[in-house]
Amino acid sequence: EDEAQAEWFAQAHPEFAALPVAASTSRAPSVDPVMVMRVRESRAASRAGLWVASSSSTIRVAVLGAAAFSEVAHIPGVNAHPNGEVVALFSRDLERAQAMAARAGVPEATDDLDALLARNDIHAVTVPSSNDNHYTYTMAALRAGKHVFCDKPMATSAADAERMVRECEKAGV
Image: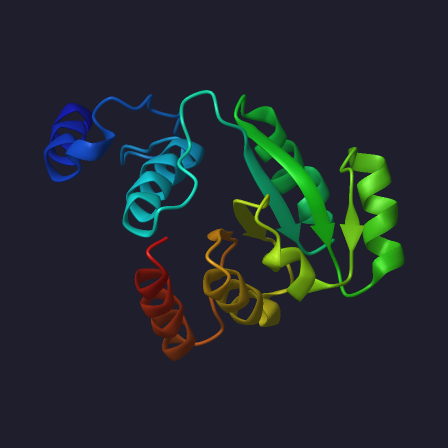
């Protein structure tokens, strides 16, 4: 059954055929999220004439939220990937962001979301903030042209989730 699912996935998503498959305990096939972002980035970039990642490019990520899950999952998860690097940590509480950044080895902490998202050297964000901020942070990042990995739940309402998906499609990321 796993082989049948993998075959279906390969046929449905040929753009991922050459990408390495990430380890998964679920029955559905999964792919490395950084590699998925790389494929999407190159599509959007080719349409907009922007940065295109190559297999040796470093994907510079900002983490939006200084909750405990940022420190135990998002920051080490991105940094564990050979092409991922967390370069900034955002929190509305600057002291909290600075303390976590120091512990986790993140070079920058900020409480200015707009300035962070305006930076061209930030390619993607993760959103492990409190659930009520997922929509706001994700929409701001999408409008800034950033790729977004939003923690679950995606939004606090189906209507917000639908708006997030539409904004993602509109942004081409």
